[in-house]
Every structure is written in structure tokens, then in C-alpha cells.
Length: 257
Image (cartoon, rainbow, N blue to C red; front, side, top):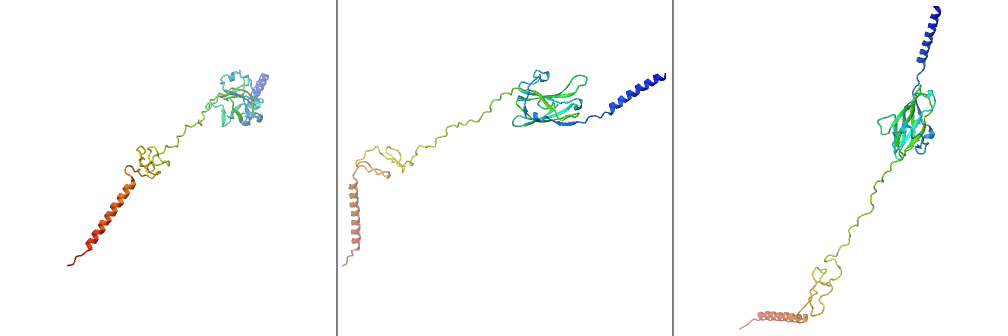
């Protein structure tokens, strides 16, 4: 009987010690670790590509790159909690959280099997051709870094070039204008209005040769000769003057008786 009690006490003590040790084991604090430096600046096409037939890549589209990140080390490394990855499409940098179901990029954490499963795998799918710029991870254990294990490269989508603005221009309207009446410096000879705006009568025959000077604006004289008209005018004027003088002289004569 005493021996049985001793055995029972020993078993109880061992169980209690085991429980105390289990509860006394300090919990690992979360730590942030960087991405392995040589893996920064990698593209999926430049990095070793393998395991594209793996079931974890089965949901990857053909125009996407698949990225597999790994937390190295044993149990002391703990598990992935979150990852923050920065990619660039060549123009803009994009930050992707893993896991995050709210963003536009498929991503998930994956745990190992066996008796002691651990979350040491992370996957993310991005548009093909992107470059991994940098990254960090929050883990539950102790590790110096996490690594890019391998990739499954896709084929970039062909993009039609944006329409470039046409450089051809419609012919500009002609700036030349037809001469308007009065603007031509060349004397008109065929009925075109002359500079003074008076149409030139070139269809009536002139009896004294071509009538009018160059652009003097006067009509050509036709019919009776101009000399006869001038002489007649002078005679009439002279006669009028003489008659006027005689009348004035007569009015000045006074008769005396």
C-alpha cells in the first residue's frame, strides 16, 4: 500500500512538472524581418522558375507571375504572420499585403503538413513582368530574413498601342485673293473697271485714234474735231466781251443841248 501511494505521488508530480514547464515556456514575440537582399530587384522571368504545375499555382492566370516566399529555419523561426511586398510595373510602385483578400492581387499563406504544421510559405500573383523591389515579414519566431524561393513566370498581356495624334493637317485655305475692282495697278484694256472705277469704253471705235490717256479717267472725244469746237468757243466769248464793252461805253455818253 505505501509503495502504491509513492508511485501515484511520483506520477502526479511528473505530470504537474510537465504542465508547469509547458506554461512556463515563454511565448515568442513577433518580429519583423527583411527580404533577403540579393532577391530584391528580381523579376519572375529572371528568377529560377519551377513547380508551375504545383497545385498552389493552379489558380494563377497565364498573364500573371507567381511568387513563392519561404521562411527558412526550424521551429525557432516560428510562422509567417503577415508580409509586405513592394513591386513596380516600371512606372509605379505597388504595395501588396499578404494575406489580404481586399486587394486586386491573389495572395495567401500556406502551412506545412505533418504533426507540427507551420506557416512558412507565402504566395502572391502579380501581373506578368513586374519587378520585386523590396519586402518585409512579421513572424512569430526568430529569423534573420525570409527568401524568395522560386517563381512561375507568366506572359505579359499584349497591349495595343495608344492611338497617337495624327500629324497630318488639312490643307490650309489659300490666302491668295482675286483682284477686286480698283486694286489692280495694270490699266484695263478689255472692259475691266479702271482705277477710278469708271468703265473704259473700248468697244466704240474712236475717230481720232485710241482715246484717253493711260488711266486719266476721261472719256475719249468722238464726233466733231476738238479744234473747231475750241475756235467757235473763243469767237463766241470774244463777241460777248465786245458787246458788253460797247454797251457800257454807250451808257456813259451824255447828250447836251
